Image (tube, rainbow, N blue to C red; front, side, top):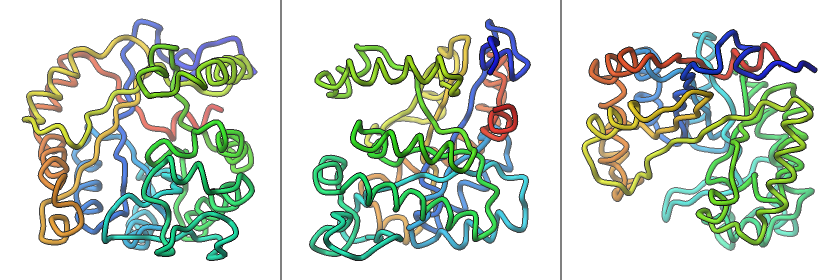
Length: 294
C-alpha cells in the first residue's frame, strides 16, 4: 500500500484532468460491437466493458482475441431491461436462486433484482460472467456494473470480492451524500459513505467523478459533449457513453434509444471531439493502466 494518490501512482499531478472514456454495453448487439470498436480505434474512447450473458458476447470475445490491445472489462449484470430482447443468467436456471423472472430471463429492473436474487446467487453469477470472459480469451482489465445493480448494498461486498479474487480493479466512484440522495439512496447513504471511506483508506482505486448522459436525452451529442468536456475538473473522471451504429437490428431492439446510441457513435468518431479533448488538455487513460499499478 502507498500514501500516494491514485493520480500520482499513475504518473499525473493533482491538477491534471485525467479521463477514462468508457463504452458501456459492448456485446449487447452487433450494432453496439461495430460502434464500440470503431470508437476505440478512433482514439477518444479508451476502454469499455462487455455484457457477457448478452447475445453478441462471442463476437466481442473474438475481436479481443484477435487484437488484445483493446482495454475491455466485464459489465457485470443481474438485469436485462429490454421488453422482447432477453438474456439469461449463466450460472443457473434454478428458480430458487431468484436470478430469473417468470420468462426465465434476468430481471428487467434493479429493484426486482435486488428483491429476488440471493447474495449467494449473485456472487456465483458474477464469478461465472468474469470466468466466461477469461475463458473466451479476453484479458479483462476491470469490472463494473450494468444499471448499478451489483453496487446495491446487498451485492456490493461480493462485487468487491470479485475484484480481489480476479485481481482487477472495480469501478467505484467517490460519492457525496447529495449524490446518493439524488440517486434515491438516502436511506442507505450512511452505509455507502462509511464503506467507500474504508475502501479508499485500504487502497482501493476510487474514481473522483462519474459523468454520463442518459440515453433518453435527445440532444445534439457533439455540442453537448463538447460542453461537458470543458466542464471536466482536475482528478480522475469516468465518462461513460453507449454507442451503437444505426441499423434495423438496433431499431428493433431499442427503438426508443436507437437514435441516441447512434449519436453517441457519431460523436465519438468525430474529429471535433478529439480536438476538444486536446484543447481542454484531457489526459485519456483506460483501466489497464490502473490494473497494472494496483
